[in-house]
Length: 148
Image 1 (cartoon, helix red, strand yellow):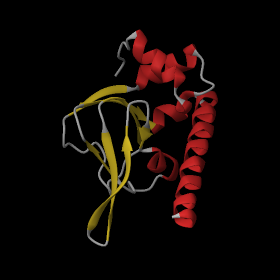
Image 2 (cartoon, rainbow, N blue to C red):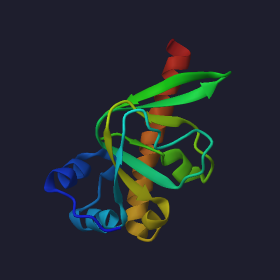
Image 3 (tube, rainbow, N blue to C red):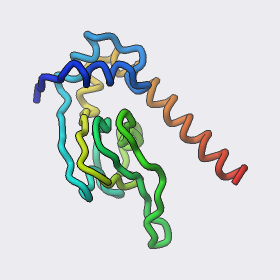
Image 4 (spheres, rainbow, N blue to C red):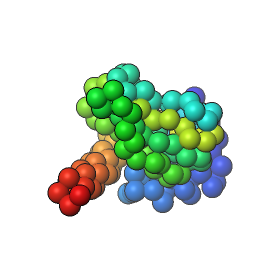
């Protein structure tokens, strides 16, 4: 579904680490296949265990990533506009490893992994940026485990 994206959204996206290195033309191609999704407070755009090949960018609102551990839902991270989620399933082609709950009304950009793969030069840049993001998260998790 092709959607016209306001200038403010395009500018925000070009400033995000996820889209680092993409030029305006590459972003336009990516957005031509992306979808804007509105999610209500308390809704789950992603549920742990579900299959999915979509990457999401939180454009407005707030959301929370949580994971079930020994029957208890544990908070992993609170998300703010500009942050992404769903990248692990996109890379691994495995079920979702955590749930994401909208803590307020949210506007999301939903990008299908199949559409990313259609433009190899853009895909290479996005995957490099996702690898950097995942590395930063792993480093942070390691710090928590070792430093307390």
